[in-house]
Image (tube, rainbow, N blue to C red):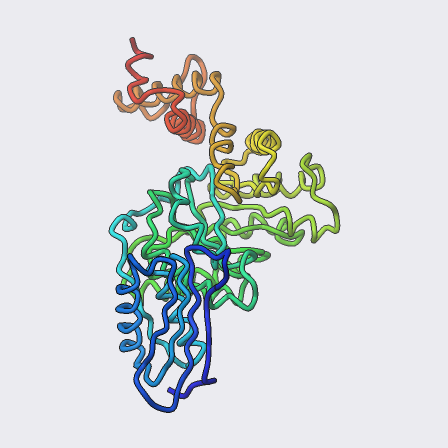
Amino acid sequence: MKPAANKANAGKSGPDVRSDCYVEIELKKSGENKINLKSKVEIMYGDSTRKLINEMCNFFELKHAEITIEDSGALPGTIMARFELAVKRLFPDCEKEFLPEFNKNNYYKTTKEKLRRSRLYLPGNEPKFYPNAGLHGPDGIILDLEDSVAVTEKDAAQLVVRNSLRTIDFYGAERMVRINQLPQGLDDLKYIVPHNVHVILIPKVESADQIKQVEEKVLELKKEHGIKNDIYFMPIIESALGTLKAYEIAIASKFNCALAIGLEDYTADLGVQRTNEGTESIFARQMLVNAAKAAGIQAIDTVFSDVGDMEGLRASVIEAKQLGFEGKGCIHPRQVKVVHEAIAPEEKEIVKAKKIVLAFEEAEKKGLGVVSLGTKMIDAPVVKRAQNTIKLALLNGLINNDWRKDEIG
């Protein structure tokens, strides 16, 4: 391989950096590789870091190099990502990947119908936020390659997100990645599809064709890597045109599990200010909910951007729930608990849901094709909604697992 330069770097340095590192590689004309390591965790991990760097030098066949590393407590997966990027910035034609071992806790699957009350966004090039994100209990964790990542750091985020999918414990949260706007986002897929991503968020969607492009590339990569699990899509509507084509987008792929709305870009597209009251976006939100429901998938609301206003967030979630949304985006861990509480069913909803579920289960036992409650017939969507209400009640500790015994007496 021919180097594009004689020096390249990757990562972050400085007194305020934590759980990250800076790597600089300078090619020399001769001599052995030299490693200059300055580490905040030298006593505990200095030797293992040097061993890892030597292993990566051998893997990438790196010779005659002076390697400078400033380690601010980065996890091994982050060090690997930063070093690999420095190598690839030196040698743009390098296609080799140095993959960390896959965390055995991350082999779990998801389902199309999984509850998605909350999804927590994490910037794709900020590994310091990753290790503890799952402890806050979000239904999904989004590693973001799009708006939260500077244009000059897109390549860095791809490797950090790839290694994090393999190594960071998500604590059972759905494993999500938001790719970049197409066509750039198609390149992101090779960094996430092979590493057990559950849901791919597709931003700024304005046509069914964009979803089909993603599906085609995902299926190609699944075949190439022998992946059997389904990978689902969550298109994000963020413009006037996308709003008008919401149903077309919602039915574009059988792998669509939800339709989400992004109001920051939508209101910018309209040329209006976004408000907490949301009157400027009511049309788009209702269009999205109707499109999602007509397509048989979930409707997911936008993020609430004021992380200090918990009551405003609570009111926003309640309003979204009344419109038919089933989940809300979160940009800070403290928002997760409030979203879950606000989206939880009220007592009267739970009482009604219990009656419907019990009637349905009784009809099933008797082999009846029709379910009735009193004089009213109950169709499948009503039963499904009641079952989801029971799930939400259980998740929020509003009823216990043996609630049927209490009802039957």
